[in-house]
Length: 188
Image (cartoon, rainbow, N blue to C red):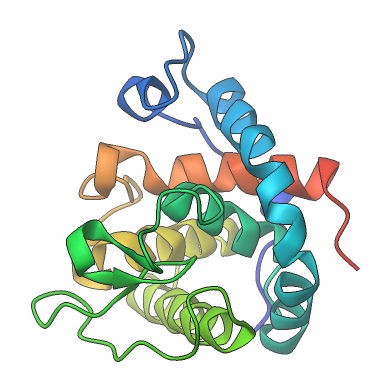
């Protein structure tokens, strides 16, 4: 499957609620870019793994980095690899809760194996959204898949893909962060 260029995906960026987590006085794309930049130093140590996984799955490494930034602030908010009150594992927060994703954690929390598992989950959601909404543009299918990664494909019901995501801005924030990483953080 070929995916849209993340640079072409429309985005409104982070909501005020998400931006307040960093005590930012602005929201939107600028806030998302600020948070991505804040995480870039910590992201540096994962760069080679992210690039490898991106190539393996045909996903822009900038998108993987953006999910890592949104989910765990490049690992900064994890406790022994766990987040979401012990319901999610690793840099990309694979949901292991039986009432959520029900996945089994694979690999170390910052391993390439974990990134492969999480990226495969993302790819699966992009495919589900593409089948569910065949008339959507490739950009909207990608954005919908990102929203589904957070909320599940059953909760993506219209082009307002963030209606049921965390902060009601998950895909918009991730897309804006990915655009920052694509422009400012070179992946090999």
